[in-house]
Image (cartoon, rainbow, N blue to C red; front, side, top):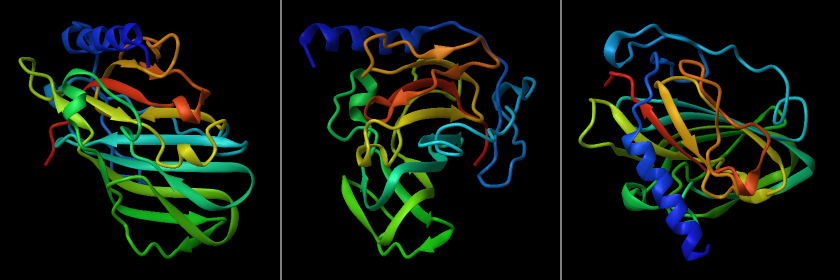
Length: 236
C-alpha cells in the first residue's frame, strides 16, 4: 500500500471518528434466532429483512451478517458457496496481512466458539478459537459452508464521543479461500453510521441513509474488509 493510499485511509478513518451523522439505532440478536434487543439512546429499532438469495445463499459467494454486542464483539453468521467443492478452508482474521490506521491499528481480533456446517453436516472443529491465519481441513470437499462464531477484539471505542460509539473492522473469515468470490456484508444491529473499505479504490462503501444505511454489495472477497462506525447496543 503506497504512502499516499495509507494517508487517505487514515484520513477517512479519522472522518469516521468525527462524523456527526445521526441515525435511529438498530438492534439485533445473537444468531440464528432473530429478535430485538434494547439499543443505546432508546431510538426506534429497525430490523432489515433477512436475505433469501444472492452470493453465499443461492449463488457462489459469501454473505456475512454481524450482530454487534455491547462489549464491541460481534456474533457472526457466514454463509459461503464455492464454485467447486473445496476441502481446505483458509481462515483469516480482519487484520491479517493488512495495516489499519489510527485506533484500529491497536485492535487484536480473534474468533471464539467457531462452528462449521459443510453441505449440511456438522464439522468437528478441534480448535474453535482462531487467533491467527490457519487452515481448516474438511473430511471431504464441500460446496456450501455455514460458519457461526463470535468475533472479538476488532473494535475500538470512539473517545471523546457519545456512549457506545465505536469503530469496528469486519471481513469474512473464509475470504482467503477464494478471493474472487462476490461478498455481501451486513450489520443487523448497532446503529450503523458509516463504513469505509480501505482495500477498495473508492474507499467509502456505505450506501443508503440512516437508519437504513448498508454496505456496498458484491465486494471481491479478498477486498471485503470494512471499517464501521456504529453505536453499540446497550447490553451485557
